[in-house]
Length: 153
Image (tube, rainbow, N blue to C red; front, side, top):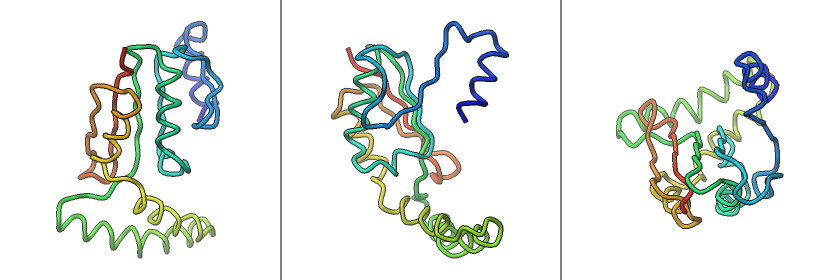
């Protein structure tokens, strides 16, 4: 993903303004208040202590810096929720195993989503570590959530 991102940055002529870094979410390789934006996609649920990772993201963001996290969720609409959970726990693992040959990964996915904090709870975590203007916007009926926030002053 970083290699593709770097290609896009170079193609846009923004290499002098944008640097991509990779690191452990609980120990980011960046100085205090040194970055304008932090993004994470489908990873925060896999961090052993999400609150520590969120505090670390707040640490490296400049005041007013933006955070965007995409993460799987569970739809809250009763009929859609039941259908999605059945598909997610029974059908998706079978398809994943058949296509990839890696059954464990497709069994792990529903388990990790099921144990991640509900949106309201994760929003509170973000506020606790210093973020403001925190939002949890459901996408695709709540199968995915986009969490956005601003680093407080």
